[in-house]
Length: 433
Length: 182
Ligand code: FES
Ligand SMILES: [Fe+2]
Image (cartoon, rainbow over all chains, first blue to last red; front, top):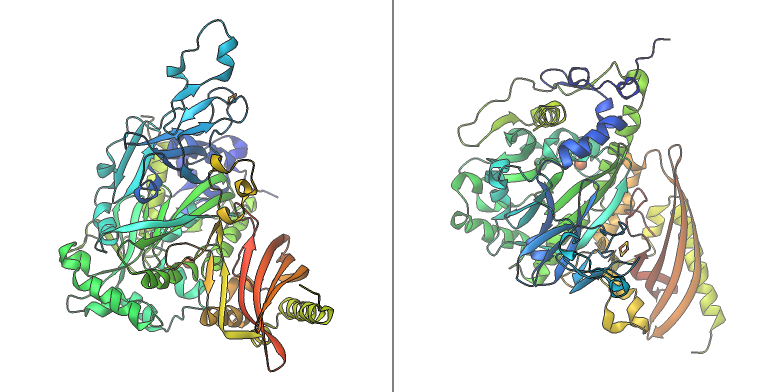
C-alpha cells in the first residue's frame, strides 16, 4: 500500500503541495494539519485585523466585554476617559485570566490567585503582597499587555496584534462599500442585543468562514427541508446573485436588483413575514437614498465576510466569529444586530429572523453545523491526501463589473473561496514581514 | 398548598407520555398536545460580572442574572417560538432533506423533579428537569440537561401545553443543536 505521507508527518509544508496555482484545488490537509494550524495562529491571527466587539456593547465608562483574537483572550473596555482599549486577559504574575465574565461594568478586575488588581483598561493598580516586600514593584510595566492596534468602522471594533499593520480602512479596501450597504441601512444604525451565543463545533475554523463568504450553492440543497430550489427566493437568487471579492479574503454574496425594482421587493426576502414587518422594512428602504448610493440601495444582500474570521448574515442580521481551538474544533460566537430605532414589536419580529433559522437552536444552523463537522471527518482521511477538494466551479469566469467594486462572479462561481485560499497562502507562505 | 396526589400523578403521566412521543419521533402526535397559543422559549445564558454589592446574599449567585430573555425586543434568547415555529420544527424531520437529522438521532428523555408550583384558575404552573441522551450517526453521543417551566391547562379533560421555558446549563454549548424539542 502506498499511502501518501501527510505533510505534517514529513515536516514539509509547501504551498504548492497544498493549493494549485489558481486555488481550484485545495488539499484536505489545509483543514486538518496540526502544523498548519499552529502556523495559522502566528501568521494569520497574530498579523491581521480581527473583529473584537461592537461599540454598542461599550456605552459607558467601565463597560467591558470579552473576546478573542484566535486563541488569545482579550478584554475590550471603555475606560474612565471614554476611550476604548483592548488588553490581553492574562495576569502578568502567573497567567490566570483576570476577567472571567462575558461582559459587565466594573472599576477593577481582581486576579483570583494573589489578588493583583487591574483597572478595566488593564493598568496594574494593586499588589497586596507589596506591603511586606522591601523594594517597591514597578507596576508600570506589569499591566495587562495591550493589543497594539485598535480601530473601529461601522461600529465594529477591530484589533490587531501586529503593530505595523496597515490602517483598517486600507485593510478593508472596497469591502467598505459592501459593509456600508449593510451597516448604514437603518436610520439610527444597529446595535448588538444580548450576549453572544457561543457553541463548539468539530470543524476547521475556515469552513464556516468560507461558507459565508459566498457559498450560495449550498443553500437550497443543504437547507432543502426549508428552502426549496423551486421557491421564488431561490429562483431570484439564481437570476440575480453574484459574489463580490473586493480584496482577496473578503467577500460578499448579494443580489443586485434591477433599477426598477419596487422598494418592497428590495427589502423583503421572506414571504411569510408579518405585514407590519414588511411595511416597516419598506419604509426604511424608501429613505435609503439618504444614507446609501443608488447602487448600494439596490443590493439585496445575503452574506459577507471580513478576513480572517468575521461573517455576517444579512437578512438575519447576525454577526459571527469562528474562533480556532484546534484543527478540528472551533468556538462559534454569534450575535443578533437590531436596528436601534425600530419599535419594540418590530425588533421582536426581526429577532425571529435570526434565532429561528440561526444560532444554536437554528433550523438552518443545524444543517450547516452538520456539514461542517462532517467535512472535517472527510478531510482527515489521509489516504485521500492525493485527492484535493475541487474549488473550480466557474474558474476564470469572474470579472470586473460596471457598478460593483471588486471581482464579480455569477451565483455559483467559487472564486470567493479561491481568493480566500489565495490570501491564506500568501499569509502562510509569503515573505516574513 | 395542600397536595392533590392524583393531580400530581396525572401531570407526571402527561410528561412521561410526552417524553415517549418525542423519543419515538412522533412529533406530529406531540404537536397535538400543544396549544395554538404556545410560547416556547429558551433564554440565552451568559456569565455576568459579579455584583459586589450583592455579596453574602443569595442574589450574588442569582441564576436569573445569567439569563437573557426576549423582554419584548430587548433581549436575545436562543429561542422564542410561537405555534408556527413549533409546527415547522415538528414537521421538518420527516423530510428526506432534513440532513442534520437523517439518519435520525436516537434520544432518551428522563423527566424528573416534577414540582407543581401553583394552580391559578385553570392554569397549572409546573417545573421539571430533563436529562436526555442523544446519539447520532456513529459516535456522536451527547447528554443534554436542563430545566423546564411550563404552563399547562386542561382542554376537554386533557392537559395541553400553553407555555414552556427551557433553561439550559452550558456556558459554551457543546451539543450539536438546540433545535430539538425539550
Ligand atoms: S497569578 Fe494573578 S495575582 Fe498571581
Ligand atoms: Fe447554510
